[in-house]
Image (cartoon, rainbow, N blue to C red):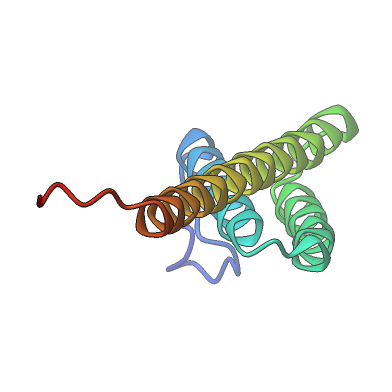
Length: 114
């Protein structure tokens, strides 16, 4: 209802916004990790910290909660990036192993015909 009274920030339950912020930060980290984009992860880190600071200050949080929100968002982003890079490396290794295996099998194919 605060939005109807002219408040520029929509009043929402803080835990829901926090859950969505952590989910989006984690997904952004995963996608940038899957693409091996370290530069994107750095830019996303700055954007996440700025967004956390602006949102926290707008809601009138104390300095401790502002820092806690910023660090929490960064942790979610970096863990997502780590998960994305790990997944990308595993997929590329599995693809390379499958290509290598098929190449070896085609080179050393044994004919069973007499």
